[in-house]
Length: 217
Image (cartoon, rainbow, N blue to C red; front, side, top):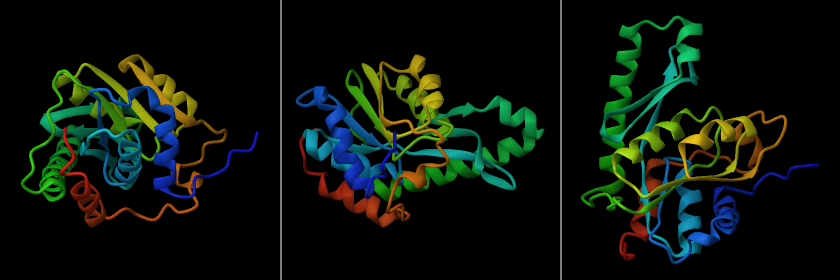
């Protein structure tokens, strides 16, 4: 069966909202993983009339192969490691700590940039819907899930337009719900399944968050 690409992240967000319809009118909060996940999350939240916030996670790229994740970090000091990659690449502890330190600093910078003076939304005892534009290895999303557990949310839903089936299966035990619209084979990459996969900028993330800043949470 042929899988058609999404036109762009906004269209993907509108379609994703259909899979999240049961959350309409609930106490849920939609959390977009920047940068590419925020336009998807924006459209999903707007369609479902739910509050939107950003949840910053940084991938720990393997030195020399930055697209290969050896783990990820999220707010609050949460760290998730990909032990298979670390062992296969023979990554030394000093290298891992250096990369983690750099990415943690960038994470803090981006949180300040995206929110400005606004505090993050209160998440305790609320359902959290984590949204990205797609998953590959799932390292960043797994870090976000672990970080949310530390914030005492009621439940975690992972919602993405596209992902490999095996990545969704691996994440399933860690969350209450996974909504993934398409799991094509071969998967290739997230960008393969978008006609427009141009980079989302920091400014665009800030503008989308500003648009919803006055909505009740």
